[in-house]
Length: 55
Image (cartoon, rainbow, N blue to C red):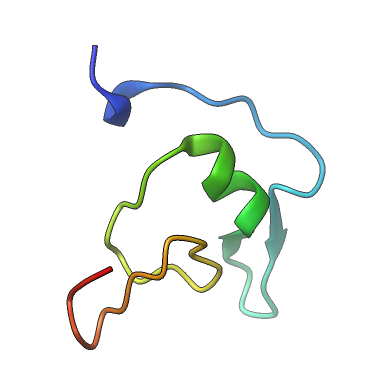
């Protein structure tokens, strides 16, 4: 089983709803997930930059 199929139960503080109505995952959630998805997430704790396409 790879990391991409692991289900992580959501807890309080894992996300918030943006003014536009989208779910935005927090640094807390990303750290629990344990890897960078390289999507340029707003609260990425791994330092990924979509502009430079690198961590």
